[in-house]
Image 1 (cartoon, rainbow, N blue to C red):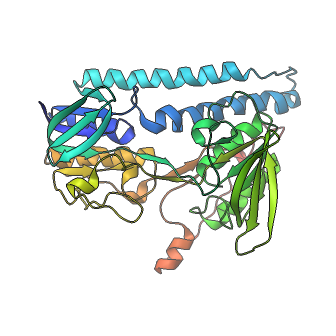
Image 2 (cartoon, rainbow, N blue to C red):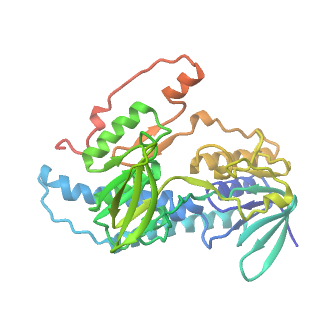
Image 3 (spheres, one colour):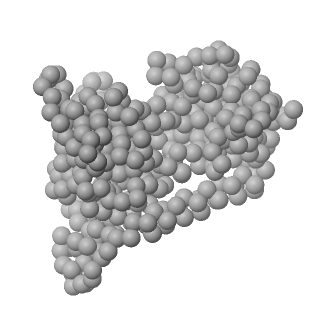
Length: 390
């Protein structure tokens, strides 16, 4: 049986960052990843492909809508297949980059599902064989998976998750986005720029519910000006494929009266949940909360002290850079150093146009906790438009 100082379960931002840092600190490290490629959701079907499409679609919109205003006359036509190929190239190149970092840092990669057998043993299963590996320490960094809603079955064709929305083979005439958070607004913006009519259905009474109220209201007005439509305080009851379209049954929150919306494609973007179901937590006695997140102390240790957890599987915002910070800190703590994460300094960004970013507590949170504060405002008037002509 192969033995390691650290076995990391998960090859996403939490996993690969923790593995690399641990190796730099002198540990013999293995990383177990269920995909053939490293990078996790973020690199393969999340942050990176979405940012690529956001960039490409913004360029397309600039050419189509704004170049003529500054004297550049051209006719833009969309080759969606080529755009998707470029997106895949970007993802592939970055995946290769992580592979080279693993090789450079002498990290052993196992492809398969990692299950914790006991406090020092991980079983790697890939459908062909099972292999046990030994570890002095184990780091859980398995990330998160999409949240589905009752009576809305995702088929990744007409009713899609963020994964399907990153790989549509044609621009829908109409798209409904269920969920007005980061993911829904970013991907809704991509397809709106490429020609779709986009309607966002949000259960809360504002978009990006965790954001400062004033920013949220201003943000929505800007998106409405761009053509995005919103239905707030609205609940989705069911979805049916009908005559080549998806028909949604909806009602107002607290209202029994129902109505219907239809579109070519429906994107379900109502959040993500900790991906822990195949880890075997119950069998080894690792405790988790009511949301399935692994419970940890201030040193990222579970109730089994040589098993650590970081990233989307623990409490806090599900952000790649938060996961990376935690993974580095956990590796340093294992090595006897003073690893630490300042959660007040972790930013959140929506990569629409304009981009919207925040860091620290919102005004509403400060009011709730009774903290005295001062409000300062500065208008970014010079950054409001991409071109002076707009």
